[in-house]
Image 1 (cartoon, rainbow, N blue to C red):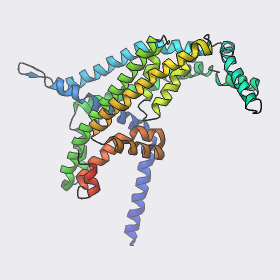
Image 2: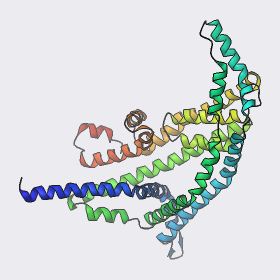
Image 3: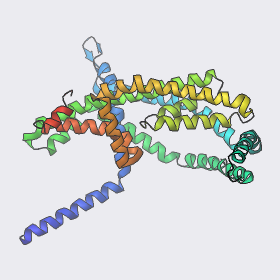
Length: 363
């Protein structure tokens, strides 16, 4: 290798390392941009409908359409905080002021039953005092007060991030060709048509996917909230929203949501007797979450995952499981949009392979 080639290689590697280092230092900006892309994709249908409006010969300009979409987002977010913040504060107050002695007395019956079962099975007698002490340590929720104070102190950073996301989203909606212009400047001419096809298909499929996910969260929230309200569970809206949000995590999300819901419900009903009143309540809560899960499995997921990204449910299942093994929970959340993008790229550049034809035949 010639000296000048070695120098170019070293400089190129140094530049690449520097680029990755810089990207890591400003990773927060990439997070803002990623959130903005999702919001822009979800706002595209509304943007399109507003842009078609005409008053005689006057057409709605793109900046006004984008501004209306941003206002709709802000209005929805303000409603969300208006209804959820008081409920969240009430639930935190219940947890922080929890009477541990009352809670322990509620568990005395089941603990005695377990002790009796241990004796019948000739198993070494468990230390009831040790179990109670462990439960008390688990139920120390005093950290929530400090957590709330930390959140309030970090409100400035949150506000900066919020305004940054809105700013980026506005221009992504307003300047429809901004991404295309960047791509045109970076892509060789012979690949331009394929890249534009990839961008167009990706926008269409991911728009439908993210809108579908928003609908999924809303429906799960409604089912759980209404069901728990019927059975008299306090703060049902908060539990329902958390269940809907956590449900974004495929397969394990519903389990986490149900555990979260039952835990908050138990903490709000520590005065009830375990066998006479609390057990039936737990069964009712489980029935609500089971209804939500069945609706999600047999109605929502086939419509959202299969129809929106045009992939077989089994195919989606394998992709999500593989992504979970490689990248954990984050991988499971990003599995479907990432897989969709890779299929679109493969369709444009590797259509000659049979395996690609099979995976992209519905695109």
